[in-house]
Image (cartoon, rainbow, N blue to C red):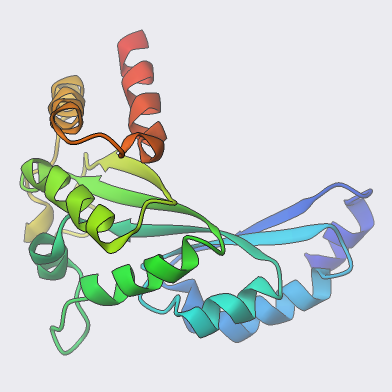
Amino acid sequence: MCKLYKQNSNGRKVRVTFFGGEPLLEANTIKKVSSMLGNLNYEFSIVTNGSMLTKNMADDLYGYGLRYAQITLDGPREVHDSRRYFVNRRGSFDIILKNLLYVQDLLNVVLRINIDYSNIDDFDELLYELKNMGIENIRIDPHLVHENLFRNEAWDENISRQDEFDAVQRIWHKINCMVSGFHRIYSGLVYVLRMLMRT
């Protein structure tokens, strides 16, 4: 693959995305691949749960071309930690926010927020938590959950495609009721609303 990129890049920017499982568990592989492509106009992104994207990890991978990260949260602390926890059942929310606080000024960060009927009313609480911690230099990407791919009871309250517009309106109403100063981070929601209004 690296050889193919080198033969066909023709000076164009080469972008690679590492995802699936938790890519940072294979940080050495990421560095090896990035080193092989390093003499090209190369950068890469990761899709991660954010728990391993510490200051040291981010600084190290930045030197290999890391420029973008998509990190996922499922709501404010209580909601997120009930769905995404470590083997010892300890929640991951506080660790992710600590990492976000640093990487927001190093990388282009998209924060994907999975939204279903069980957490839609907690959306504003999460935004307040982010703002109170000083996490504002990110793009918010609300993702409406339509299917329970993991067969996890935490995801049983999916938003049907027929109810999608109503769900986005509920989220939008919450944002409009909030204090000013949040507008920079809602480009993802604006895009979703525009797409829904076209259909």
